[in-house]
Image (cartoon, rainbow, N blue to C red):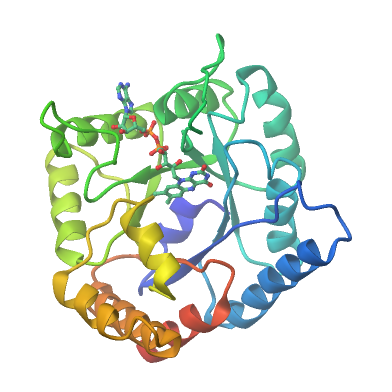
Length: 299
Ligand SMILES: Cc1cc2nc3c(=O)[nH]c(=O)nc-3n(C[C@H](O)[C@H](O)[C@H](O)COP(=O)(O)OP(=O)(O)OC[C@H]3O[C@@H](n4cnc5c(N)ncnc54)[C@H](O)[C@@H]3O)c2cc1C
């Protein structure tokens, strides 16, 4: 079933989940890959009783999950009976291979694709016939005229690379680029994570004013440890409220307390999102306990 149809028929706020698959650089059968797979399956087993609207599966832009991403999306749908969304990135998806990838998705009955550019590795060299931006991938997917539901990423605080001459995030330019993806045919969006709901509500308001009318699902990732805090600030470029950062700093040597603060913060955010959004998307990091505690608290 298409995510857009699920969201349209939803009466109360649903939950959705993101998992990331093992990298193919870890050999099948190696203890590392087994551990990772069992963490993913534990996550799905524990969280599926909350009736997730869908589970999305990330895709590594350097191609390191090429052979694991789509099969995992298929397992989620067939074994766990939950709708899945396969992420695809421009960087590891040559235009010429797209038709074959779509055939595989079709065969596996995967109806949803999250079309992304992917983070460019430091030594990234664009391919002559490659796709540069996510909007081009959406256009290319639509050009194939298949019946997939296509989602895209949205950035409440602006994308890290979209900056003005003085180095500040250029929210207007980034919104225009977001709208290009919608104009090309995207029918839902998942937001980058944020720790201050106001930035999400402001983004939705600006997007609506610009004519974007697709659902914009808020992305939530609880701070689980100091590493996730670094990812949130660095890779995702989300701002951390001063009082929250101070609270964590006060407990920097107490991992249990940091996890508790992270969960409490996410519950606080979700309570204020419930009933105002069709769905809340959790970046699970392949761990069920934090997301499970948050959903339990909301029920
Ligand atoms: C919900 C979600 C899921 C994600 N899943 C994955 C994943 O599975 N794998 C992965 O590798 N990464 C993933 N990412 C990260 C994402 O790939 C990176 O943030 C990447 O840097 C940008 O991807 P995008 O699809 O937003 O790119 P785009 O929409 O193409 O935007 C990238 C940058 O280019 C600018 N831009 C866009 N179009 C134009 C244009 N025509 N001219 C000039 N500038 C332009 C934008 O403003 C932005 O700064 C995810 C992010 C989110 C929010």
